[in-house]
Image (cartoon, rainbow over all chains, first blue to last red; front, side, top):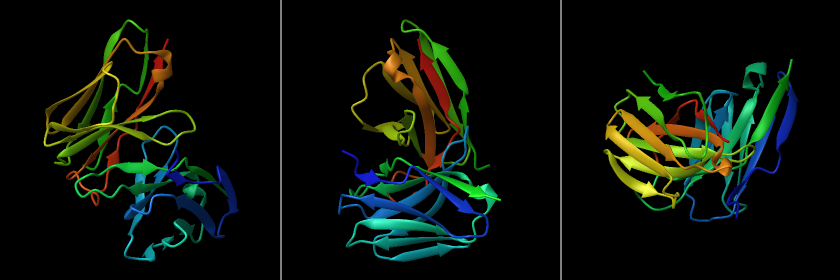
Length: 114
Length: 114
């Protein structure tokens, strides 16, 4: 049972345009969401996060939007750059106080074309 | 130093072998994690150590034995593995165990069980 889903396994975008990566979750008890970026032969790198009390968080070119009623979040990258080409994982933290268990989505491979 | 290192990068072992994976961080983090990632799947949590004590074991088979000899080191001892245990094993650390602590990941060890 996949609690965090990324339905697009891949996405191709032109350099300079917007990349939109989507993520859906099923568990309403999730209260914190993160995006990780992974290059080949490297571990995931934290990118940006959002708490369930917010609906938007912005950091430079990266913005994450959270729609709790739809159990949906998205990552916007503007403008996209070739160096952004990587696998992007959405992750959710299970509610439980001291538990820091990340539940990852299946990932979306972003290819930014020059 | 914001790096988590893992050795070896690649490991091939037979089903009767005993081997160990090593993970090291010098960020003063007191929580360390082992994840398993199969091809085209998200990382899945195996173990969490908090202040050198095993905090979470996600019902991992006993052929995987974690060890945290000190606050900087985390080992995963492997014995009598099965071919289906072939995967990327990721180590991560965070300042403390808790839902809002960013996890830093190592590059992983690619394990093949013959």
